[in-house]
Image (cartoon, rainbow over all chains, first blue to last red; front, side):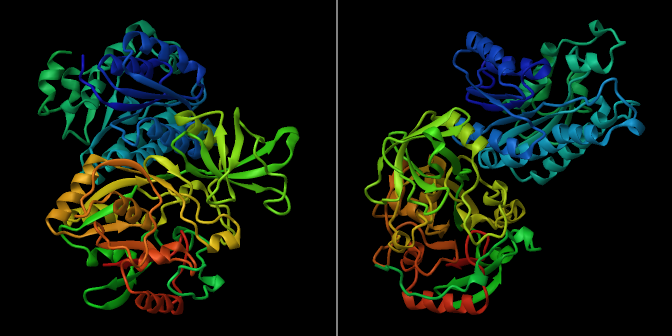
Length: 260
Length: 350
């Protein structure tokens, strides 16, 4: 239960769904400090209390931030690095917004909404990585970007969201290539279909019972946040697929993934 | 009193008013004046070619302190007087030294006094405790928040400290180095501003080693010409971590060069150094003033900005070079229209 011992972790979009489960599981795995961010601080208070109950050793700092605004990202990173004493081990870019619902076709997509979705889902992760990297580059670290099947396949109606995830896919590869000479690894994870509010909003006619509980897809994130994944970068993981959807086994994946 | 090695006139048009990226060049394309002490020569080049003067085994030490938006607006009770508070220094007892400037009229004549309570908004108040003895324009203030909570609020409320020579209210981002980490500086440690990650990776590939320390910078001006002319040395907080200390000591023992990026790094390392130039990891405060008589123990080279005629940093250069050589270099820089200040050109002394 100590796979993340001494790790200092920043998670965006931590108030519910996958981000919430990641915060809880990272704490269970012994993370020393977690900065949780979401638009509203009060949404994070409950999860902070929950962590205090299950992992009292894990320090939790709540930072409310609107990721669509660049100056808020500077504040978030500065506050996190102040909390962490200048060292960050793991950044999880999880926050995303769906855009308007019901989801309009691109032809009908209002420009303002399109921009908002790209700001939160693509520009914010870019800025967060850019600003957080200095605190990782000397000692190494792990950046985990949450992507989606909609980032590989175009689906009608998934408009700006899908396009932002296409961007995340490419951005993850570019970062990984630029950081090849460093100890910082950049990977992306497609968590698959999950029973989250966002997914229910996106597909109200589908049966959410068929989708996974976000609590059941965290294993790959723990692997990527931990030292077990050292040297693994530029890869795409599918949380709900066999062998995490990898074509070949990575050095240390086999043993860990085998236990899924 | 002027401790500076010489005086010269800095023409106004040599003050960098915009960041290089807003002057149509890359951040690493500012000019570089190289002073090679061994070869006894000076040459002029561009900063992105700095690698030509560095080699395998050199250790470059950076100050990774992040710039705070250290200028906060607030008003005393009953909305008067309203002031701008510039955070200068975080003291060990968790109070701060702060430059208080009146918003209207004479910057110091609006009844600033001990006991005043200033309301900054976002639930942040500051109680003025007393005037600083060494630097009388500074006041010691106790804030209603501390630690990470205070940092968060400072970022919500503050603006970067800007001086009158800049042409626009540039965003905080322009006042950060690309490698900035922990927040705490009142002003950008600007000697490293021109580095890009591309350049840093390239240097690393060439076998140049890098280390990071933190020295939270204070203010460069107290907005009082007479006081600034005395350039009183503030006390600054610094951290040298075990990784940086061991890299520095290894380089020293192996006779490799230790090149400081910025006078802040010189101050921190020379403060922490023992007689043999070795440093221990430390979290301390320094008031060390480096002048011609200082024997450099750890640092063997310096990358720095161009300093103002009266700046104490110019004194610091005399620990590296005789005053007449600095004078010659500076006259040449003025003649060649080098740019001064945080967005300006750079000087490498090796």
